[in-house]
Image (cartoon, rainbow, N blue to C red; front, side):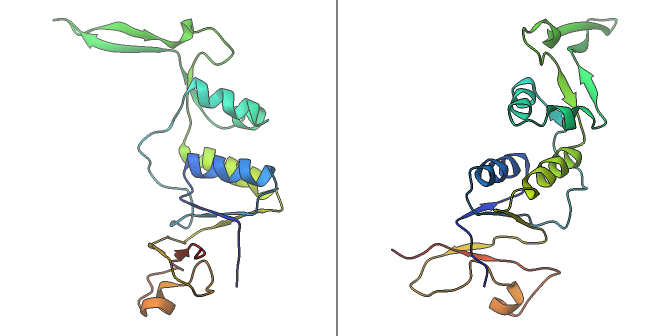
Length: 167
């Protein structure tokens, strides 16, 4: 039986940063990620100035800087009858160290966060693990079980039922 103090559902940027922060604080944390890896298309591969500053605060700026990336400092749109480019935003004019948006494949960022969190003894990430329901009862059961165990219908990996202790 596996136990954890905190279960984070979803290994996206927010879930991985939360897992890293909790693990660094000594909290036993397990992040559940329904996919087998982070290599897929995402809605956005942008890392904004506030997130760049957070990565710096976490001591990850150097590692992040080594990831393949493009820096965006201006936003331009084709406007007018001749469709000439007009600058509608100038991020480079912001004060501070991070006055750009980094265009980075999200899988690279997630791998960086998972690798860093994995250095913490209280961190676990379970890939191919999808939380499908929250159950509350008086029984002592593992925090997750496979879908095949619970319903007899697995689909390529363990699918947990996340349990909260009954109080």
